[in-house]
Length: 281
Image (spheres, helix red, strand yellow):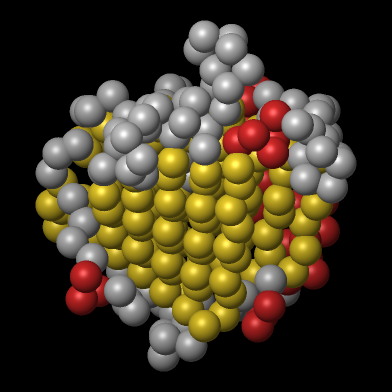
């Protein structure tokens, strides 16, 4: 990966294909503040798929945190990774920010789903989220990123900044996709047309693949969004034949979760042919 020389994640998880065809955890190095639950099986999942919950023991993301995760899905594996709950990004009153980095490598014919719950941005929180995916031929990666505002004192306050940078590269390191944006919480509170309007929650969903027709994926995502109320969303093809994505604005966390779940179901049906069951949280 391009940032490997400076990237020292607190958690590294390697998925391997066992002799019986099931996906297991081959190597794991998980340190504070993360905790990894044991692999689980759910109805609706492929026979060989493992589902895992990655939990935080710290109570959220705090000022000055520099957190990192790295996932390696070996050839032919199928894994679903999610969080146990939404992650709170706490208020930061000393001028510092927090950083959360994720590296994903998916080898040939692997399916890796990294779909954590939305982060909850408290007043004066500052977070930089960086995700880099290396996509090998035949691999598929489902990736979700979402945030909601929360003002526990009902004082009309919002987070300060949210920076997002998502990068996708091929096996040779060639840049396929880069999606970057920066949000200021006060801009969202103003509900400006052309930025967010009335909507106070937002998310991005990526279906990354070099072997599936983007137009089919886009059509499936658009159909899934048509069934969700309280959202403003769109889906389109990614550049360089790297799959499809959607951006969604929602009235609240409930609508956001519904839209992200609908997109996940649509892509699972396209890739696997069966819909996943709701994961218990």
